[in-house]
Length: 203
Length: 203
Figure 1 (cartoon, each protein chain N blue to C red):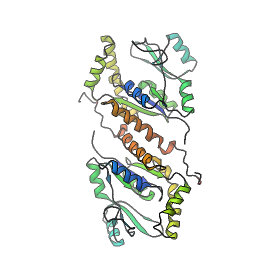
Figure 2 (cartoon, rainbow over the protein chains, first blue to last red):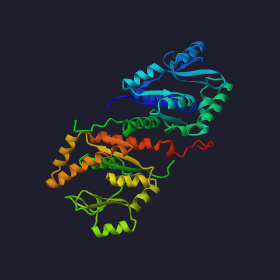
Figure 3 (cartoon, one colour):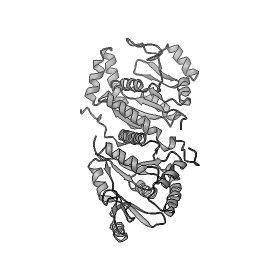
Figure 4 (cartoon, rainbow over the protein chains, first blue to last red):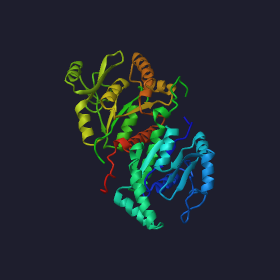
């Protein structure tokens, strides 16, 4: 009953708290693999290369695209920053039966949907648009221009929720993580994912 | 975010333990409604009319069919016993936002699938065919002929598992119930079931 791990694609507007929810899930389930994205954006204070992102130059990123080393990639905001998912680590973890989390934006998620129709698409929502604005504004690490771009982008991302399988409203992180755990358990019970042990009397 | 309750259709061969799993779920979640079936079969020792089943005569059952009082019905085994689901209680509970469990056989489940495509279909499996035989034989309340019919019927029911959404292997009741709980939580996060609170800034 082992076999491939689940590929969990998690998206949501900036400020919905998807990072917090993912970290809380992994604190409870260290067996789940987190796919570290590559990006050309500058590290924020406290971010560590190889942990939060692989921080790479534009040249290196474009090499990765050309060499097919990325499972999906996208350019976000008007900043022109690239984000992408290194392919090999994801495939290795899935083959080893580990569940893998991809915390990526909607553009990237749509690329994954085409390549991995069996992946599970989960959208994290803020409890309300007011709360979303408060969270984005309150982060305090970004310029007014950057905040304004994030708000515009959040509105666009929200319109994609219907392309996802599941939607979790993140009012309380604890409850949001429980829902994420439930989705993982439930998906492992899906008939189309199971190798059924009832074929001919084997125990 | 309230609205209709979930309709959970639970099937599985005799001896898979679906009754035990359902009772354990309801002990934890008294808010879940259990649909009491009507049947023409004789009560087993300890079974109470209106709790385990509505025990009715063949004449009364056929009246219920004719009057459209049953959501689904089937005749099982060669015994010719009828089983069916009284319609009104199910509809009332769903409309009141309560989740409803239908513990019914595969014939009945296929009828529900046609009428309620949004219902959730869960199949309970025994850990192995050996274990299934042991459970059916060990119940000790039935004749050899009845046991032999149950075994034949179990084999037929097992072939329907692929028509279901989820499949839970009942090796430990505790774990099986956790999976059932997870399926209920996950299904409530399904994008197509949600009334999304992000339309225009309401909190």
